[in-house]
Every structure is written in C-alpha cells, then in structure tokens.
Image (cartoon, rainbow, N blue to C red; front, side, top):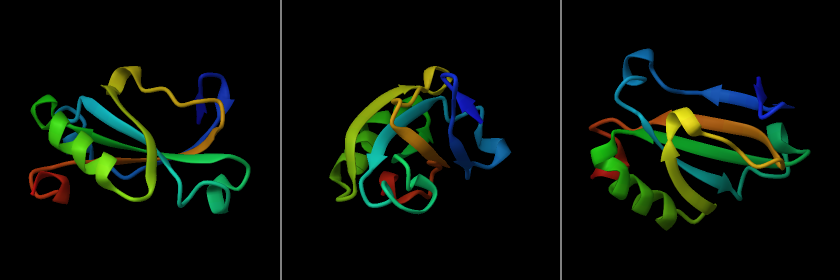
Length: 101
C-alpha cells in the first residue's frame, strides 16, 4: 500500500465490524520489530484503533509497553507514518482488549 507516496507493508488485523467505532488511532514505533523481518529496511509502527471515549486508557497502555516509542494519538482518518516507516500493523481495541482492563 502507498502511504504518503511511499510503499509501506500494512497488516490490518481489525475486523470489519469494528471499523466504524475505532475512529481514534494510538500510533507508536515498535522498537522490537523495527530493523528486521518485514521492517528490515526501516521501522515498524503499530496503531491501535479505539473509540474516542477509550483514547486515554489506550494511550496510557501503549505508553506503558516496553516496546514502543514516539507514541501519539490521531483520528484514524488522518493517520500518517514517518518516512522511515516500512511496515505498520493496525489493531482494534474492543471491550475485551487488555488496554481497557
């Protein structure tokens, strides 16, 4: 997929039925996955899509992980990745997700 005019491998793990509710995206650089595998030529990023009312909890959960840096939150429709990104995984945060526990 092309993002911002660049080829980026996108792995979208969301279920279609969660697209409408997950309008916010908590974005972070994955320090563990960057530099090897699908991201051997750059950085791997991840985005956790959630409802606006869950944004603060998801943001805190992502910041507390030991494998993320450069954490931010944007509306999903405005999701963009830095030029160093060659891979991104996208996830849904639903009611049973550990970020909300």
